Structures are given as structure tokens and as C-alpha cells.
Length: 206
Image (cartoon, rainbow, N blue to C red; front, top):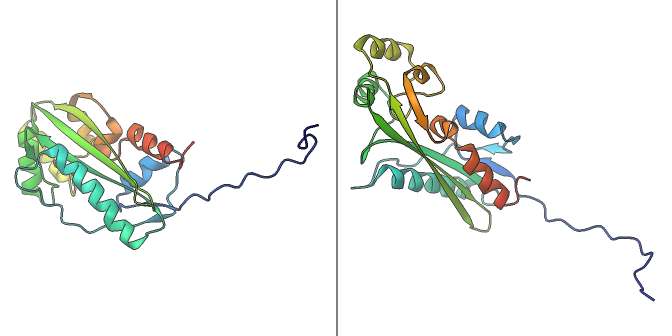
């Protein structure tokens, strides 16, 4: 006779999930992660040197910064799962800056006018045990040829401020986009397909 027949099933013990920290003060990334049904337990803005390394490509730059942001946040929240991201606009091997002034934004728009460029959006998930999962989306974007009046109007609107490449695809700059191949959410700042895949692999999302 099986000694377990009729026995009361014992509850399965489950390891509690670590709190989720979003290592970004970007409201765009908070909005994007909410689309996956997640609300971070904590927001930690990281302060790292984002200067490109000599001869660093846009792809490598995005991947490196996402991982460095995660590690910086982990020093402040070592028991948490840290989610971080970085988005880089590249024209060839050139890394376009985050526009902090009108002149920079204007230079970026003039460079992107009428041509293709690539947006590399990296995401990193660092677990409390040190496991680092990484993913990258690469999106090709082609802008229409921009007239001086269109550039002036966009600059006057101010949504370029702090944006990689001097534009925000989620704003009026989407009207400049002739076509896009890749991740729209990645161009905004967090590639949702890749992010979801990392969270599922880590057991943080069903």
C-alpha cells in the first residue's frame, strides 16, 4: 500500500522574488515597463560617466552603459533585481549625443535629415546573485528631408531636450519618420520584447 495515498498535500515552499528596481529616472521607461504590467518597487537614478570610449561603436556603447547603470544601482540596492537600459542613436560609427542645448539638437537633426540611422536600445537585468542578463534591439529609422522651417519648429517645441540624437519618436518627431524597421519601444527608450524576455527568463514575469 502506498503510504502517501490520502495524505494531505504539503504546501510547496516558494523562494520570494527580489524587489524590482528600475535604474532610471526616465518617465518614458517607467511608462514602458508599465505596459508589461509591472510597477517597480523602487526607482534609482544612476549617475555614471556616459562618455564614449575611444573607437567605441554605438552598439557597444549602449550595451556597456546599460550594464554599468545596473551595477551602479546594485551597489545601492544589493538585494534587488536591477533593470536598466540605455538608448544610443548612431549614424554610421558615430554616436550622436543626448541634446542638452539647441545647437546640439539642431546639428543632430541636420545630420539625420533625409537619411537612415540606427537606434540601439540595450537592456540589462542584474540579479542579487550577480547574474547579468543582457539584450539589445537594433532599429533602423529613416527621416524625411527636413526643411529649415521644420527644424526651427521642432527646436522651438523643446521635446528634444535630453534626448539621444536630439529627437523623441513618441512626440512630434514621429511625423518626420518615413519608415522604421525594428522596435518602436526601443527607440522610445526600452525595447519591450527584449525586456519581457529577460524578466521571464529570471522568473520575474510569467
